Image 1 (cartoon, rainbow, N blue to C red):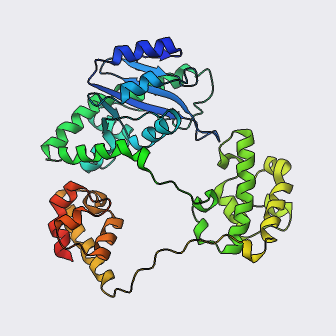
Image 2 (image 1 turned 60 degrees about the vertical axis):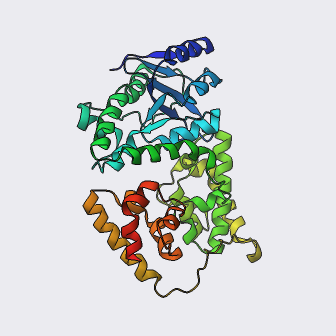
Image 3 (image 1 turned 60 degrees about the horizontal axis):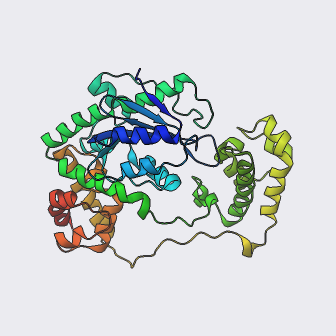
Length: 374
């Protein structure tokens, strides 16, 4: 069990940042409310040095500017496991930019570790057993129980030691520069992400398989659910699951009783919302055809009879490279990258390097073989 200091006042935060100012490396993790609440917020920030751990409560200290200035320094490395989510929520809710990242998950992927979860890595390399029982807990409630605080402190207390082990292995395999390239891209990602203007109901898994008249129903019941979730500040799926929404859209109920018979719909939902759900379904059914949602058609490419054959050759080449270098498919070249290569036919390494998503290390180590496959 890791000892920690809980930070709940601006004065304590300033003192904490001052103590961390001379550190060369710190570990970071966050706990958020998105699993339980409609309005996402950062509920806890864990920071560890090689010897001390601090838990910062952003609900008690909403102004995290001192921490932001610390994390923006280029001379301090910040170790995170699976950094993408943590970096995005810190940027979105607190405008914090972390400049110098070491992501232990990315390092594990580059080493082709069989299991890349933090618990698995800590168990393998440090013999630490991690209990994940609070992984889906509600971190927005206060006061946080001692057991949850102990769990949170454990998330970062071993991270720097793990980082040191993974760095050594990356250097042994000659992949340290690969890691540096991947880590540098993480810093910009939260600030360069394209704005997704696609309606939320279309982002549900399986929604894009529906026909326009079914999408009209889905849009209405999804809109109803979002309104209720926002009003109650509860995660949307806790009001009504996504699979139930799709079921209502593809096989519309005629009565409240029909809704009650759906798998996953409990009596409480029917008592509170049954009539409103049915009304939303009927509203979607009654929409005129010209008001049905329409999906954007995917980009059409000129007919290319050899494209599929080129893509198959590229995938076979990737398989050979994966075996030769002991790597995951995405580290050699993700499927989308192979499709872009097959479509655009880059004529040399410089053209290959210019493709979106192509890393320098991929071009240098695998580029010649991929070009030859064309």
